Length: 100
Image 1 (cartoon, helix red, strand yellow):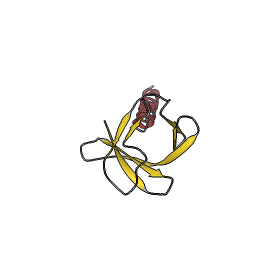
Image 2 (cartoon, rainbow, N blue to C red):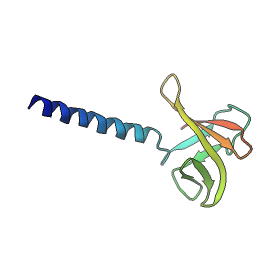
Image 3 (cartoon, rainbow, N blue to C red):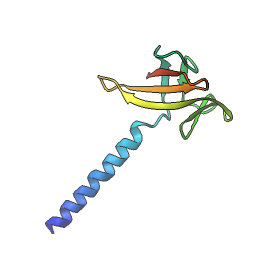
Image 4 (spheres, one colour):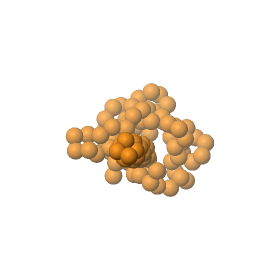
């Protein structure tokens, strides 16, 4: 009986960890401003709250539905746990965006 309780608790922890990791890199309904890092940026503001402006498919960023403008390089946290989005433009230059 004790092993069954431990197994259920372990499954619960694994499910919560999976859900929280999946949500932390979700860009839907988010707004980003260019933070001045690197030599490249694709726009001053990236607004993913409405898909008529910017869309994400896999790791690519599109204007509207078809025009590829950049690729997501990484998402990381700074010292005070704010997300930073690093985007490569089509020339290969990376720009940093801060979540607003």
